[in-house]
Image (tube, rainbow, N blue to C red; front, side, top):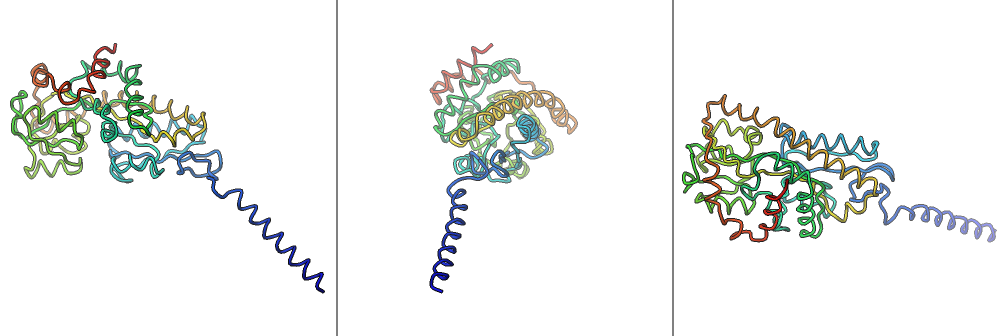
Length: 344
């Protein structure tokens, strides 16, 4: 009897150890094989969460859809992309912080938002760097753009920027006419919560007021601010044509959207997935520039149809007023401004 009990207890212990051993093969690891902790599925499948501050009617979202299509196609279904528009995962600042924790895998927004980590990223919002759209393409679809993005990522220390494409060419919309730079003196203008925008308009004599995009229409309608600046597509998306009857075509900033990832998380993906993400981002960046160029005139017409006055200002007067701005306020950017000027 004792032998039977001993045998039974030994067998039970062996079965328990076998069960624990089977479970230990999955402990401490990620059974999904995710480099960022957000993947789902089997060991060879990945899911990327992409933050976009833009809504579903914006060209940025259309580009996000293109990125999703390209990644899923190029990876043969190995990688799934989930888009989260309208800041549904949090603000851009929150999501940039979330990259390092795996709460977000990709941020697709202006890389000037990296200013808290990189002074060089302010180059995205520096005024009057480009002659025209061909010049812009020469930079961001060429070596100069790649050099700048790598420098920003390196300065951040924990970011990799896959590619950048045109978010839009920024214009000034106001409730009273602005014919030249002297007319903005004392005007309250909404700007993004990025330091170089504040400094640019302060230099020009305006009173810049940082506000979230969602608050712009109400602020203008209530007279809290006298106007704002954004590309035509973004202006229409914010219904600015309903509250601003003057557009001054300053063309002061060619703003870019960029695909931003945590460098550590990106490095954990296998090489074939890294290659897919890079290629898809580069192709999407070109696509974003294309659709912004195509749609800008259409969105300008919305202002015309709403009865707005379009003012074709003397760009050289604005450039003269901003002479010395970068050298004094952002000397670290002059090297990159020169690089942009030299791009062919």
